Image (cartoon, rainbow, N blue to C red; front, side, top):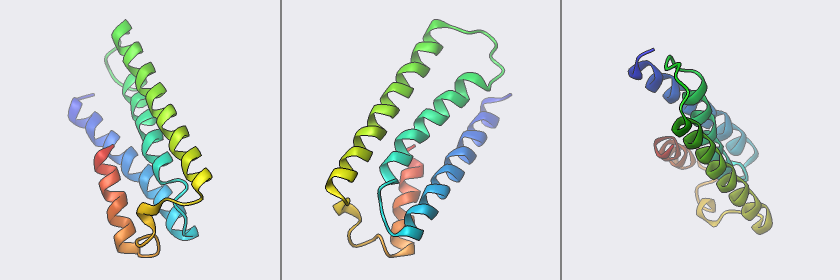
Length: 114
């Protein structure tokens, strides 16, 4: 599989994953899943790029990199989810949560960040 093909698949995974969470967040009018979706998206991509490629040589560096990206993504996602549950809302979304366009633009930037 070429790198361009892998890039296309990771782009598709990110788009569908973020779109799924955007639909949930916008439909219910809350932002509990917004940051969680961003952090866990990194985990999905790390696992995909580690286990679904044509590079059949397992290396210690690949395994450590995947492990630490997953650890970082898990810690980030859990912390941000915990924070928004404790605070009961995220002030960043106070004025845009109910606007499809404005809230959608934030999610597009989140896709680009991932």
